[in-house]
Length: 140
Image 1 (cartoon, rainbow, N blue to C red):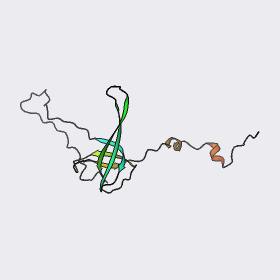
Image 2 (image 1 turned 90 degrees about the vertical axis):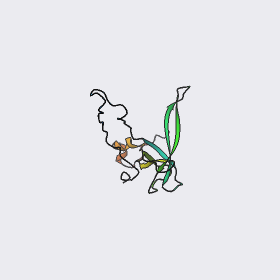
Image 3 (image 1 turned 60 degrees about the vertical axis):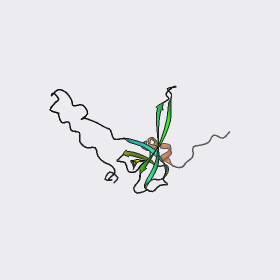
Image 4 (image 1 turned 180 degrees about the vertical axis):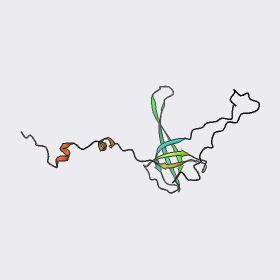
């Protein structure tokens, strides 16, 4: 779907060609460069522009003086070609070639995190499966 977008580019394969000046045991310097594709996860905060969403990414970083971890928020502009995202959606940002002056990411949908997944995996309790009979009350 979005992976066939012209904006997402796969990295070229790594090749190391030995230089004639270098001896066999030495690795050439400057020819081998490995970069990880930047992937961020954030929440959509604005959808006012056409084919663009504003995504807020929250990360934890230590305070320079007090060493306590604090939340740092940064807002990125991401490409949304079909205008499919709404405010509050959780998206993944994949690095791409520059699309405009401020857009360097493509927004990809993520499934929402289910906070009640644990209760869905467990079978229902026997008292819940018996019926709609309320438990006996102890009136004084």
